[in-house]
Structure formats: structure tokens, C-alpha cells
Length: 328
Ligand code: ADP
Image 1 (cartoon, rainbow, N blue to C red):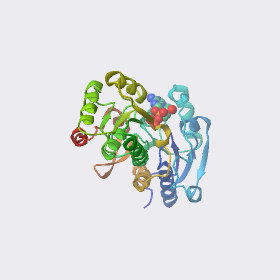
Image 2: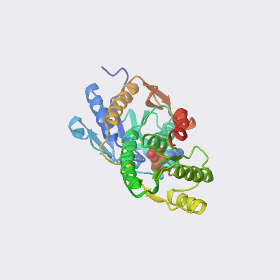
Image 3: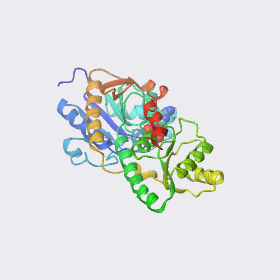
Image 4: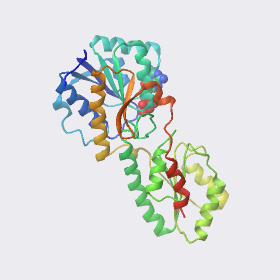
């Protein structure tokens, strides 16, 4: 494989929420770059590093022993200044000073929006790699980090089930997902939850309360309800209070929070990250610009960056249909 265009030097950054597998993607970009004779400059702390000029050349040895590590060796941040015109211009100047031909950004939809804004002022090629535990990006079946986050949450829920069962208690477990309920739906299905409260679907607490009552009457002595943090009825604590007012029953609340972000990436996440990192660079040397890479219906693909937040990836309708049938 040889570069077919003029890409000689690229920047690479991780931005927004960290996700397990980001390191595997970094490794893949750097080593594919090395294979192709392209120099990769790691940008520290996401867009913050573009503003301060925090670049570091990365060779194959710099990415040794990171494939199995959660988080990101390039660090990440949220950068308000990058949203301003002067911030974008500063970033452009630093990219030009470093003579970079392209930039690969690994992150979620905020990172993609930032990349799109940057592409309006900087002429280099920009490619996005989907790194977020939320799985809420259009253009890829799964995002890097999602599988690990689901399995981490599931392990916790399995443990909660043991105690819920033994003490005959009802639990509300809050999982991450401000805008999207992918994690909640997946762990709800694979953890055998009695109900799942999702931001995408209107929550009816009266019918949930009735369902829990009927389940008790039918002999169920414990229940687990999964709450996505972005549910319109509030977080799990608020919902527990509202359910208590409706039914008089006490609900125990567990908020899984940031523990869902960390940890060793699963095999699926490492593989996806490795494929997408290398594929991003290969697409760049083919001349692609302002696109995000992904695996879509199983096939490595690119989607216009601007489409990734305009179009919404739907929750699996079959899983949604199964939920109430199986929670009997
Ligand atoms: P994620 O990429 O995980 O969704 P954020 O939403 O926090 O994370 O976005 C990461 C960063 O992307 C922000 O801190 C900001 O620097 C940049 N960003 C987000 N939206 C925009 C925008 N509309 N214009 C410019 N930069 C943006």
C-alpha cells in the first residue's frame, strides 16, 4: 500500500468523552501511517491541544502496550474556545505551522461538529473515527467503546440482581445515555430487566407502576428497571421518588455513572477500533475529506460528517417489541 496523494504528515487527536478502544484506534493509525511512510503527530487534549500547539510525533514504539488499555494516551478534553471563530483560526494557524496535510479526530458527535467547523477554515483533509460509549452516531452500526460500556454495565446489573433476588427488592439502575438509549436498551434486554426507560420513548410511570404491581401479584419478588440518564421523567432518584408516590413502594437506586467509561476494551471494541483507525487513514490518502468512517451493516464505509448528527440512528425496533413480552 502506497500513498496515492500528497498526504505526508497528519495530526491525530481524541476529544470529548473518553471511550475504551480509543487507544487501539490510535495505535492503528500510527502504525498504518508508519507502514505508508506518513508521519503522525499526536495532539494532546483534543481541540485544546490544537489551540496550544501541543503536538508530539508518534512512532510505532510510542503506541506499544496500549491496545488493551481504556482511556486515551493522548488525553481528552472539552474545549469551549474551539467553538469560537478566534479559536478555530488559532487551530488553523497551528495546523499550518506544523505543515499538516490531514487530521484524524476520534470522538463523538460534538467532536464531529467541531471537525466540520474546522473544515470551513482549514484546507487540510479531516476524517472522523467514532469513539463514544453512547453509540449515538449515524454512519456506523456501533461506536468504539460501546460494547465495553454495555458489558461493564451488564456485569454490575447481574450483581445487583443477586441482591435484589435475595432481599426481594426493587431496583432502579441508571446507565449513561443523555440523548440516546442504546446502552439502556441493550443492558435491559441482556440483563432481563422488567422495564427500560429511554429518552426516545415517552415514559408512563403509572403504567410502569401497574406493571410492577401485576408482576408482584404473578409471583415476582424482585425487579430491576433500567433508566437511561436522559429520560424525560428525570434521573433514577427522581423516578424512584415518583414511583414511591404512585405505589407506596420503596425502590433502591444505583447510578452506575463513570465506571461505564473505563476499563479494558472488549475484543469487539479493539477490533473495531483497529479496523476503523487504519481505514480512516487509507480513506484520507484516497482523497476523502469531511467524512466519518464506520462499519455500516457490516461493511467499512464513510458518511459525510454533516450527516452524522443530522440523521438519527434508530433503536432496534425488534428489541423494543421484545422488551415487554419477555418481562413477564
Ligand atoms: P463528544 O465528542 O464526546 O460528543 P463533546 O460534545 O463534549 O464530546 O464535544 C467535544 C468538543 O468538540 C467540545 O468540547 C468542543 O471543543 C468541540 N465542539 C463541539 N461542538 C462544536 C461546534 N458546534 N463547533 C466547534 N466545536 C465544537
